[in-house]
Amino acid sequence: MGVIGSIFMFFPLPFKIAGAILLYLNILSDKVDGEVARWRIQNNLGEVYLRGVFLDELNHLIIPPLSILMITMGIIHTFPYDKTFLTLMGTLAALSLPFLRINHSLGQLILIKKYIKHPELFAPLPMKGEKDPILSIKNKHSLIRRLFFIIHNIQDFFIIVLLFSIAFIGELILPIFRPSLLSGLLLVALGFLFPLIVLENSIKGFFSIEYKVRDLKEKL
View 1 (cartoon, rainbow, N blue to C red):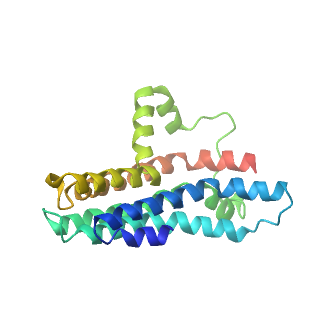
View 2: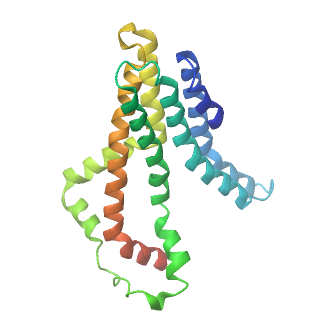
C-alpha cells in the first residue's frame, strides 16, 4: 500500500488523492501491527518473527521519502514558480526523513555496536542522577518545550500525508490553487523545515548522547 500510494503521487490529482488514502492505510497498518502480533501470541496462533520487525523498519525508512520524491516529480512540471528550486526543496525534504528516523535509534546502535564491546575505551558515562542538559533546558522553559513539540509533530508521516491531502483537495476544488500551487508551497516549506530539524537533532544528540547511552545501559 505504501509503495503503490507513493507511485500514485506522480500522477494527476485524482490519483494523488487515492495515493494519500493508500498511504493512510499504510500508516494505519503500521499502528496496529504490534497489537496483532501480541494478540497472536496471547491466543497461540503462531510465532512472531524478527523478519516482521525488519520489514517494519524498512517501511519507515523507505515509504516517507519515496512518497515525497514522487510528489516532487509529479508536480514539478505544473508548479507555477521556479521548478529547480522546487526540485531542490523536495529532495531535501525527502532525504531528511530517513535521517530523522535513524536518529531515534542512534543511541541503541552506539550502545550495542560500540560501547558494550569496549566500555574501557570511552570516558565514564554520567553518574546516575546527572540530568541531560538539553532536557533540562526544555523542561525549564515551557514555551521552548511546546515549540519543539509542535515542530517535531510536523515530521510525523501521518501529519505529512494529512497536509498534502488537504493541499490536493484544495487544488482539486478551487481552480485558484491550480496548478500544484498549494502542494508545491507545502513541499518548499518542508524542504526548509526538515533539514533544520535534522540539524537541531544532530546538535541535541551531540550534547545528549552520553546521557542517552547511560539510560539505555541501565535499562538493559
